[in-house]
Image 1 (cartoon, rainbow, N blue to C red):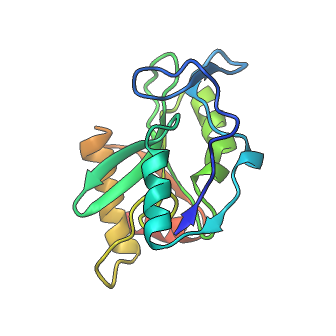
Image 2: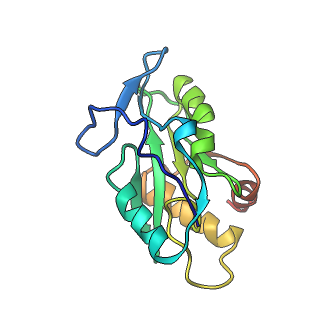
Length: 171
């Protein structure tokens, strides 16, 4: 499991859900993402991964949803003014993480899209699937559940890179 130290670079002024909000040059209110330099990937297993996930829960922008036996981490960015544009689900590849999607996410939010960026199960802050054979199809079902039941967006666009592309194709 890849962990990420995002305790540096988080601003003050967190809202009640723990997301730090800022306004970009287009006037869009977005959750603050950590600077890329603050994120140093490292491989974590067992208790070290569990400790990291436990400390990550209160950090700005981190949300978690229980889907089946998995805890799925995701970031949700919403434009300041509602639009009729479909939300976009951005899926990272391997060995990357949700942090690499931040520039694309902010551009999409600036264009009026709601953006959801999860950590794929087994990556980042999401839990590791316990059953064998958890591939792109099973991951697609988990993320469809995230979008339809947790985020409440039954219609959405999806883009994925590397492993995320396999999951997007399965969706």
